[in-house]
Amino acid sequence: MTTLNNKKLKKLLKSKSRVKIEQNPDLFYKEFLKSEVFVPVIAMEDEESLSDGDTLDLQIGFFDEENGDRNIYLFTDTNELEKAGYQIKSIAVNVMELSIILAQFDIDFNHIVINPYSVDSYKIDFDEFLEKNNF
Image (cartoon, rainbow, N blue to C red):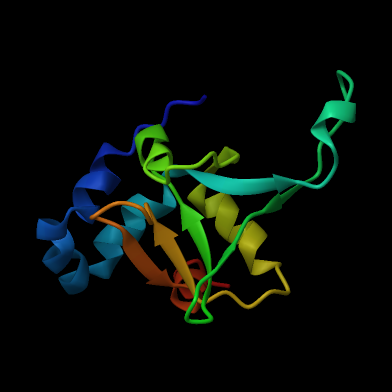
């Protein structure tokens, strides 16, 4: 699996850095938008039936929460993926490129949740995320 280097982002996500983020959200977004993260995906075909050179259609996985929220989970590294306790198929993607893809969805999302299974998970309002990217 791809190795990602998000040390600065993970440092900002630590509980003790939250005040910095709240006081200066642009500091967070500057680092977040240049990051590469793992995003869960769902294969739209049977992967077993593919041959070399075939393309695989993927859909970004989202999570419907018990409270009715529809969220997108992002993971900063493989350690964070493993905290889920179950297998998550994912691809590595640049957050800026991901924002372009998500802006085209016809689905209403509530939040983007970074490292959702971590004590340092961080929830971002989806509309605010798009606004920071000028969508």
